[in-house]
Each structure stands twice: as C-alpha cells, then as structure tokens.
Length: 156
Length: 156
Image 1 (cartoon, one colour):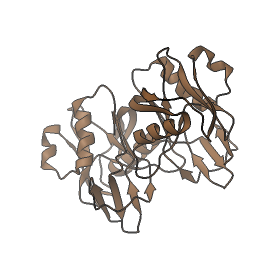
Image 2 (cartoon, chains in turn green, purple):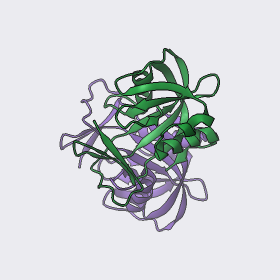
Image 3 (spheres, chains in turn orange, purple):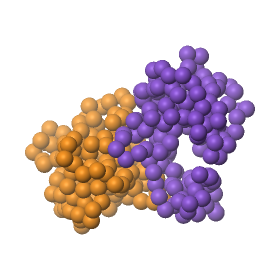
Image 4 (tube, helix red, strand yellow):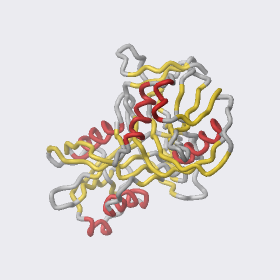
C-alpha cells in the first residue's frame, strides 16, 4: 500500500486514526545499525511496524524485526516516544494515521539476515555511513537519539 | 460510560480496539501523590485518559490532569510503558479496548485542586496511605514503579 509522510507540513490532511507502532535499534558487534530498505516508500528505516491487537508493543518489535530482516531480538530499553501530531501518514485507502511510535534498544539473539516482501534490502550500517542513505527525517531523529546515548528516553 | 477491567483473566473478551492513553504522577512538596476517585468505576487512580487525535501523548497528560483535577502540569519523564495485551477494558457500547498506556512523571505548575464530572474526589495521598484506597492492580503497578524510583522505564 502506498503512503505519503507529512512531517510538520501545514497542508497535511487531518488525522483520522492512530496505530501504536514501534521501531527497533538492532546493532551488531561492530556497533553498526540494522537498516531496511522499504518497499512501500523506497526509504531506508529501522525495522518496525504497527502493533497487532493481542500483542504487547515489545512483542511487535520482536515480530516486525523477524518479519522484515530474519533476525531474532529481545527488547532491552527505550530510546524514545514519538507522538508528534504534526507527523501524519496518508495511505491510498483514505486512512490518515497520526504518528504514535516507540523506539526500543534491543539485543540480537540469532537468526539469518534476509529480505522480505516489505524490505528489498537489509544491512548493518555504520553510523558514519547513514548520510549515504535516503532516510526520512522522523526516522533519522530516532537513530540520532540512539547514537547520542541519551540517559533518559526522548518524549515527543 | 460503564466499564469492566479484565486483568490477566482467561475469560476476557477479545480486544477490538486500542487507544493510546496516559497517566500522570503529580506530587506535592511533601511527596504525596495526586489521586482521583473516578466516577465511572468507583476506583482511585492517577489522573489520565485517552489521547485525542491532534495532540501528543504528553499533551494528553497535561489536558487530562487539568480536566480531572484542576492542576496544571508539565511532563518531566517516563515511569513506564504498559501494553499488556491481557489487560482489556470492556465498555457497555461493545468496545473492548486493549490497554496501551504510558505513565509520566510531571512537575506541578499551578492551578487549584477541584473535582470534575469524571472525578468525585481529588486529593494528594502519602505513599504509605495508598493501601487505604481501592486501586486497580494495573494502576497500583504504575504507582509502585514510580515509588521504586526506577533508573529506567518499565517496559511491559
């Protein structure tokens, strides 16, 4: 499903839904960050997605990371809470979803890196190489908060 | 609207919605915690409620605390993330809402303590006196996490 991100855009349509979502920071032994090249909007992002009914938000991080990258993780902490109402996602079925996303730190448990229907490339990227990828500013904000090593979670 | 809380109950109905919600820990200079006696379920709770479209989750904490208690606050930090899918709230219109709630620490800015249509009593309660009040276990969990002074937010 195609989507358009509106980020601090005064011409954004009014939101008509909110879906709790999650992103996961997964790092390898070299401190590189697991990034996915998304099929739906052609951008690079942290693995993640919307929470299903019947699972916790940490469950959703584990499931989405497995689905999108093949990697098994567990959640270890919280980078931040991202609920800026001026970030909305317009889908082609008329849904306009207000951003509501948590970003977790994680520990890798196993699995084998692979792509999926939602992700055409998956790879670990050194923080210094992130600028070579096309990353949405709202996603880059989360990655930057992780790299900063904040003592307390961002609340926004 | 009447509601029934199901908490780790195998006979709970299946959830059909999720609404991001918030509770606020507001303390006075003596370290007492602001508690509200709720009209809808007759229980004592932290001030809080559901996020409206167009506001952030921190905005919701500020608005709900003002509505329910008359007190102006700002958000200062996060006690925890509460998304246990085995906690559902059944409303008498057929909605079965899966819990999805953040709990914030706050700083009091002003205002005058008062009740509201949703809250028949509002008062600051010393942590040692909490056991005299009828508080739902899921709400008590958040208060206990605050009182413990955890270094990092609870994720559940």
